[in-house]
Amino acid sequence: MYRMGKEEADAAARVIESGELFRVNHGAQETAHFELELAQKMGSKYALCVSEGTTALMSALAGLGVRPGDEVIVPTYTYIATASAVLAVGAIPILADIDDSLTLSPVAVERAITSRTRAILPVHMAGMPCDMDALSLLAKKHGLFLIEDACQAVGGSYKGRHLGTIGDAGAMSFNYFKIISAGEGGALLTSNEMVYKRASIYHDSGAAFWPYTEDRDVPFFVGCAARVSEITGAILRVQLTRLDGILKDLRRIRRQILDESRGLVPIRSNDIDGDCGINAAFRFETEEEARCFAKKAGGWLPIDSDRHIFYNWEPVMSHRGAFCDEMNPYLMSLNSASQPDYSRESFRSSLDLLARTVYISMNPNWSEAEVEQVIHRINA
Ligand SMILES: *Cc1c(COP(=O)(O)O)cnc(C)c1O
Image (cartoon, rainbow, N blue to C red; front, side):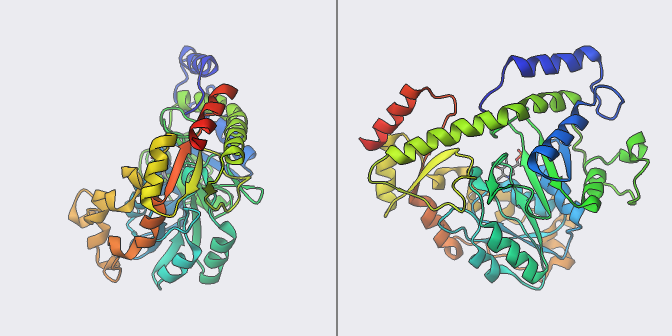
C-alpha cells in the first residue's frame, strides 16, 4: 500500500451508511463495479474479486480443473502462497530455477516438465515481468495451462499487455503489502468464460443459494469461502483510480535512480517499461560486495527475505500439504509418481543470483530532495 486517504474513508463510510454491506444484495454493487472496472482496465474479459491473492490463485487453479495427479511448476523465488494454492487443489508444486531477471527461467521450466505437468505458474515478483513469450510458447508446445501470479505486479505489463491477462488466468493481491490495497483482497482475471464460472462457484461455496447464480450452466461443487464485503469493493474502486499515478511515480523515480547511479549494473529485465518500479535492483560479482553495498546504500538482499525463498516454506518443505494426512496431496496415491525435489543443492543457481542482488526499494511519495538523498547514498 502506497497511498490511501479520505477518498477511501468516504467510500467505506458510504457503504456503511447505506447498510448494504453484502455484495449479493441488490444494493450499492460496489464489488460488481470494481470487477468491471478492473477487467476493463487490465484488458481481461472477466474479473472476480476475492478475499486474498491466495484464494485468487486457488480459484484460478480450480477454475481450470487442476487436481490431484497434476504437477504445477512454480519458481524458487516467490511467496509461499504460490505453492500452497497448488496444494489446496490437490496438485504438487514442482520447483524450477529463476534466471538473471529473478523470474521463472523458461529453460528450467522445460527441464522440469514431466508427463504429469498440467500448468506453469510464473510469478511477476516485485512487479518484474516474466519472460511471457518464452513461457507461452512452452505452454503451447506441451499443452499446459499458463497461470500468472501477478499478486505483486498489479498494473505492470509485458510488451504492452497487462500482467495477469496473458495466460489462461491471472491472480492479483490487494493485501496490505501490495501496490494497491484494501488491507486484504484479491482478484482473478481470465478471458475464459468457463474458468470464470467455475472460479466464481469455487470462491463462494454457498453460491447455490444466491439469486446471481441462476444463470449458471456449470454444476455446483463445494469450494472455499473467499467472498468479499462491499467495503472492500468500495475501497478497491478508489484504489484503482490511484494505480496509474502510483506506477508513474514509482517508475519515474526508479528511472532517475538507475540513470544517475554510477558504476552499478542493474539486473536484466524482460520488459523494463512494463516493470512496476517497486525496486531498483543491482547485480554484484559476489555476495560480499552485495552486502557491503546494501549496508552503505540503504538496500537489502532478496536472499534475506525469509518468506520468499523456497527453503523457508516450512509446511511445503516438510510435505504437510493439508490439515490431515487423507487430504495431503503429498500422500495421495494419485500423486505417488511425483517426487518433488526441494533440496537447496538443486537450486544453487537461484540462491546465488538472489545473494548477489541488492534492492533499493522505491517510494512513490518521495520528494525530489529525498530522491537526491537516495542517489547520493548510492553513489557514495
Ligand atoms: C502476496 C502474494 C500472494 C498472495 O498473498 P495474499 O496474502 O493471499 O493476498 C501470492 N503470491 C505472491 C508472489 C505474493 O506476493
